[in-house]
Image (cartoon, rainbow, N blue to C red):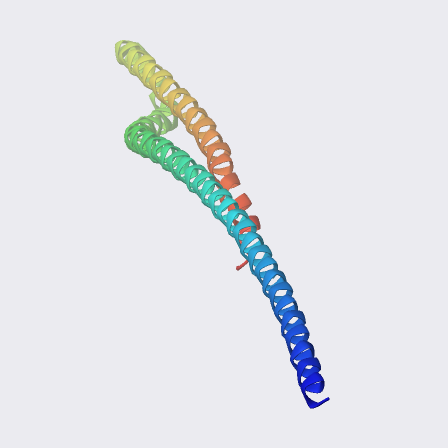
Length: 196
């Protein structure tokens, strides 16, 4: 009887060991499946991260290229503005020279007009001497014609100054349009930047 009990116990322990071994093998296979699924998920996440990094690098490269193009465009526009300003400075110098010439003509014209006023004041006194002064009057007429020619030259110079001022005004307006066009990318950049 004791031997039968002992055999039953050994059978039970063997069956329990087999059951435990089967449970251990099942647990080990399920653990292996979990580990493999985690490795697969990590591989997929790593691939997505690599794609995201590559996309970010491509986007950053595109932004860098567009910023380079923008900087080159701004540099070209600034060079054009500098050229226009230099042209405007040369035109201002020409205007100053012509204004100086006009001042000289005006002063000579004032002197001659003063002489004419003095001559007109004396004509009443010289009525008795008109016969002797007739020749001098011809000389005075020639002086008046010279003054008229000088006045015509002054008018011509004033017309030239007016034309130069119109040209300068047109160039300043075109420069204003170009400066407005140059500042468009800067304004759009200011709108894009999150800080003031």
